[in-house]
Each structure stands twice: as structure tokens, then as C-alpha cells.
Image 1 (cartoon, rainbow, N blue to C red):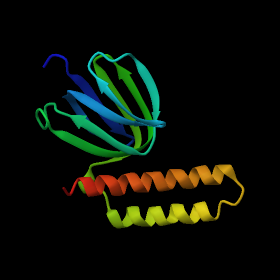
Image 2 (image 1 turned 90 degrees about the vertical axis):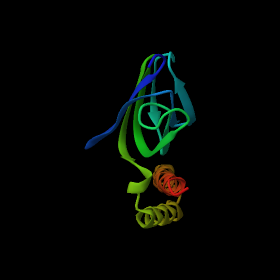
Image 3 (image 1 turned 60 degrees about the vertical axis):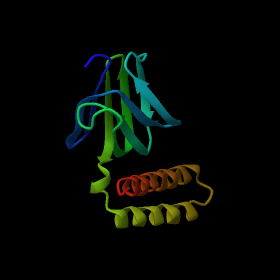
Image 4 (image 1 turned 45 degrees about the vertical axis):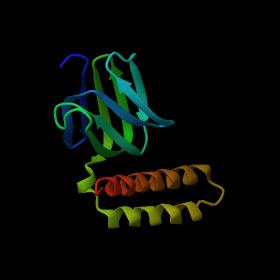
Amino acid sequence: MADQLKVRLVTPDRILVDQTVEAVEVPGKNGYFEVLYGAAPLLSEIGAGEVRLHGGEAGGQGSVQRYSVARGFVEVLPDRVTILAETAQKPEEIDSGAAQEQLQHGQKLWNEAGEDPDKYAHANEVMAEAEAKLESAGAGKH
């Protein structure tokens, strides 16, 4: 399996992914980026969104595996990618009802933030994580 990336997706309580893939998309703090074999080394903060694994040993060529993640870091090396996330879930593990409640809680925090930019930033993080979970849960049903 030449020209394949070794990818690990790790949370504080488990290893979700430890396999080789053709490419991986990562939700960077400022937007998504894709990593291919031979990429330049990089260390980046990740935000709320989906890690998407393309091809590889679990699904074969053309397959895409998705994981909803929030907060953490990604280390990119030419032959491997390590994603350390505070939270990560497979789409089928996401409780859509709880994610909807989290979104409503974030909206409430946003409405109550007043003039405090830190409270706005926190509310936006809560809502972004909830929206990413809802999007992943919806994508897993197709």
C-alpha cells in the first residue's frame, strides 16, 4: 500500500481510527484542509466539524468514513496524520436529540452574552459543535 497515509484519531478515552487511507479531510480552526501522502509537516488546531477518511483499508477505494470531532490538534507528517480531539464520534453514535438541545443551549448563551466577546466566542463554539454533530448524524443516514 504505497502512497497511503497512516491515520490515527484519538480522544482522551479511546482510539477511533488507526488505519491507512488515501486522503484525510480535517476541520481546521479556519476551515477544512485535505492531507495527501507526502504532505509538508504541519501542526494545526482543529475546530468542530467532520474528519473524512477517503479510501483505505476499512472501506476500499472511493469510500468515505466520517467522524464528528470538536476541539483538538492535528499533526501532519509526510506519511502519517495524528488527530487528537477532545470529542469524536461516529455518525451512528450521535444522539440527535442531545445535539439539538446543545444547539438551543448555545443559542441561549449567545442571546445572554451581552457585551462580553468571550461569552460570544464560547456560545459560537457550543453552537458549531452541535451543528457539526447534527450534520454528521444526518450524513450518516444517507
